[in-house]
Amino acid sequence: MKHLKPVVPAGLEEPGDVPLLLGACLVIGALVGAIGWGIGQFIWLLIIFPMAMGFGVGIAGGAVVKNRRVRAPLVAMACAFLGGVVAWSMDINIGYVQMRGAITDDLTAYGETLQADTGVTPTPDAIAMATDHLLVAWGAGRDDDALVDAEIAAILIQAPITVGELPETAPPPPVGKLASFEGFVRFRLSLGTSIGQVGQDGTPVGPTGTLALWIVELLLCAGLAAFMAREAAMQPSCRACKEWYSDEVFATVLGVAPRASTFVEPLDRGEIPTLVEGLPLPPGTANFSALMARHCPKCDDAPVYVEATAFTQSKKGTENKALKRGLLDHRYYAEILEAAAAKEAAAAEASEPGDREASLG
Ligand SMILES: [Zn+2]
Image: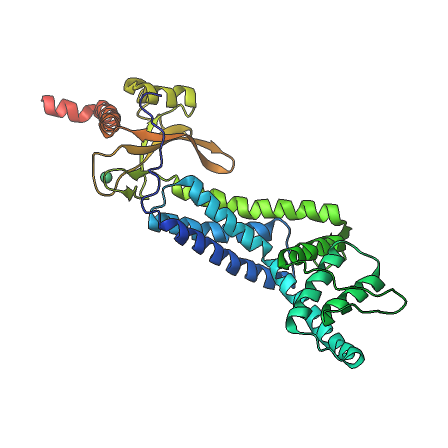
């Protein structure tokens, strides 16, 4: 690399922006995820919905990156990825809260019958512990229902109890919220899912297939968010002015050869005559190469950010493809513009012999 220099992000300017970015990504992730959960009560489109949620987090994360000048791609990626994880997992989080609520209601009712038998009223703490225990038991796929019932009863009254035919059962130790969440996730997986077309009965998918589907959805959601935030943080900026380059793009047509070997290499080596060789474009030329340039909005000394772009005509219309991106010294860039303009002007003059004759006469 000689003339084309890679964009090197300037890094964090304000370390305090990281909690801000992370917070924004998590909040937007929760919001987008909640909306997704709401729609998911009626319809769920595989791949598309997770990507739409990731897109939402990516847009928000990218906006904060741009606004707060977070020029640290890894930081931006990590924050947006976590936001995407939150977005994707909202369905499970809300399902967990709902199921806890339903179990708590059931156990409160059960506690009243226990109270009649034992004289002990289960405390809210005991009901919460019993709820956790039940979710872990479901997650583990325990089929010894009678023993689980006895354990639940023992937890509720916080004392050994005999239920049915079983010997006396002592209350098992508390398992904690995390274990109960994990139990719920395992339970949800054990139920599997079904995929199919809207309005049809769908094909059942087993626990392993469901887990694979979840992982794909999670990676799509969080991956897209992370990619978009990284793109925002990788945008060129002026070191001196600490400003992002403006979004305005200046295009300069450079020749007929839209191939890297005949365009990007001379550009990098500084071979300006080769670059403008094909100028002006012969009439009807559909395929050409151009420099798409962006500048610092404040100063003229900063390197110019260019995308060496190939334009090709196909049945779908004009397609453009960036062959190479990088920074050019502003003087070198100016030389290229000058050479291209001179080539065009010379050609224009040559094609108007009438004017020349008139001036000679
Ligand atoms: Zn500048």
